[in-house]
Image 1: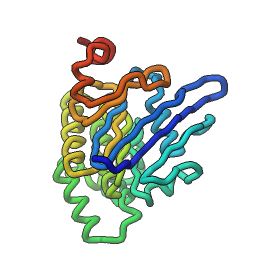
Image 2 (image 1 turned 180 degrees about the vertical axis):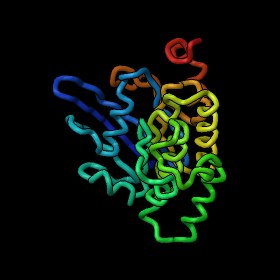
Image 3 (image 1 turned 30 degrees about the vertical axis):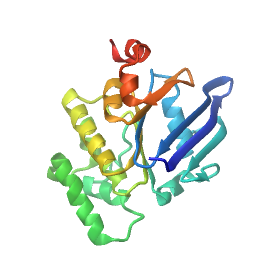
Length: 240
């Protein structure tokens, strides 16, 4: 795992006089599942939005390199053509489209019709609830079902890097378990993942490496297993 997929150097994000991210370095290598954990307001989501160029306002400094090339100035919608996909906080499904149409939108850059249909069947087998409701409008689904759909839609693009922003937020414990099972399996298939998550224990149990973010700074980083056993991490984020 030495090939860098994402490399962030000296990232700073400010909204007026408020410094949300204060100069962080972070790297995700080929095939890794890396998690960014921290309390609410630590700057985790802002970091993801800086990567994807989707900050509505705010001054961004530093360098963000994806597959060795800077993302500075790249229009967000072009990222999917470079096989970078994000499942945003709040899911962001197309509410007035059916489940099947949402999945097709995830594959809009692809032209292999047989492969697209095979992938839809694959995700229907992973998430049987979606198959049962394939013609249903996405806006009528429960939060957990929308999260399933958002993940499947992103994976339809065959991403080289998958960004996940708080996938467990607002879900029932049984649904959280299912979502993390899928995250682990997708990682085992070789998809490179950067996971932002408030459930630090689940995130570190699934990840190879982790970064702890606090007040806009990376305060601790290392192997996920080591972070799980770090007294500071346990006290602050694991309730131990």
